[in-house]
Length: 103
Image 1 (tube, rainbow, N blue to C red):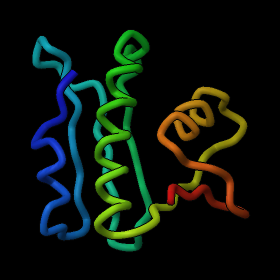
Image 2 (cartoon, rainbow, N blue to C red):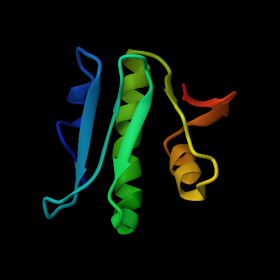
Image 3 (tube, one colour):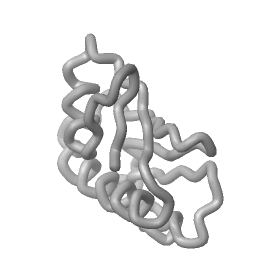
Image 4 (spheres, rainbow, N blue to C red):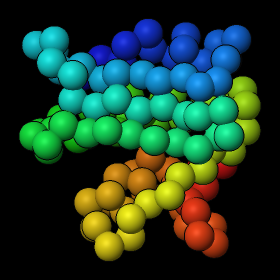
């Protein structure tokens, strides 16, 4: 998978921002970003299971750069959905009260 615009998205960061993650075949499998209030969001393709590892790696690079440049990101995770919790943890988010935070 490749991350559209790589971490250049974060350089000179203007919020909100978003990135799309593509398969080598040019098919988008995930889109994610951060809103002006520093809340992270994501939409994932229903069939992205085989692309999960490269997707998480690409997302991790963006979040690491975001945190380095801007600071913490927050997310609301539906904790009744194990796949969503697993993805949030893989991206470095951890529970912090009612929301999850990536520092």
